[in-house]
Picture 1 (cartoon, one colour):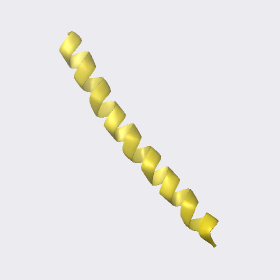
Picture 2: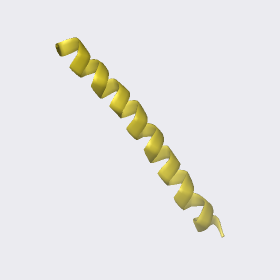
Picture 3: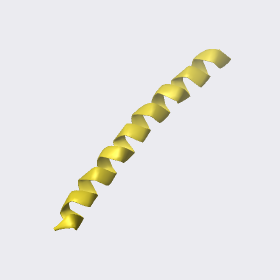
Length: 33
């Protein structure tokens, strides 16, 4: 039963990291230009 909960938790964490990464990437590109 734990496996069912672990999978969505990992995907949510990955989505959060992706969103943060995109924000940081945009800041870097904005600072360079």
